Length: 94
View 1 (cartoon, rainbow, N blue to C red):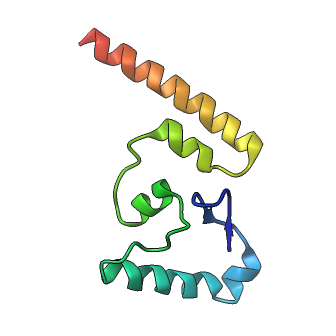
View 2: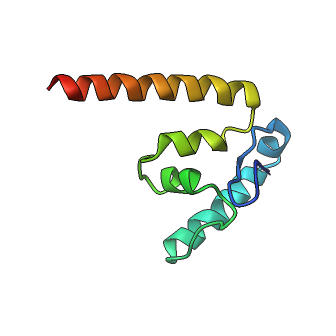
């Protein structure tokens, strides 16, 4: 149901788990924990957890490490880097 590094897990994309409602069951545990003031699932990536509770990713360079596919992670890293350069340029112009 999860993939990634220990302490930085993200949900997998598995159609069989989706069909068997396993994601729904995991979702119920996470919701129950958050609703009761708990930490959610402690093994989740900080960035994944923050998005689940409606917070924004504040450190995108760090969040890139949560992408488990190496090729996709490289693309996201490059786009993230270009976005930061663009933001810095834009802020300097003001």
